[in-house]
Length: 116
Image (cartoon, rainbow, N blue to C red; front, side):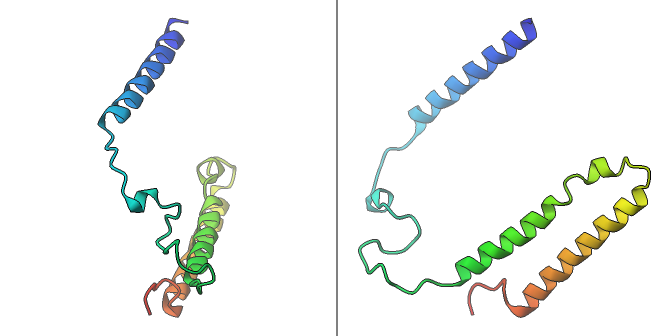
């Protein structure tokens, strides 16, 4: 009981201390860029119908593709405790090989180059 109370008190006091430190050390010097409602780098006063680069979407899709496939490897430490860890190792190695081949293909096709 004392350990739980100590940990909760320590967590609460540390949180209050760090929040107060943030308010005390923060620099409140807003400029026109910080007060702008858009933070994406485009001029908010211009036309809303400017052509948007498709590269933003391609990078997002590539990130999601590789990130979701890496998430398949997260249960690997528990899967090695199964009766046949060689099968687990084979499937994990195959998945990593496919990811590596996909990355090499995207690199060779120029999907990872931002400037053309």
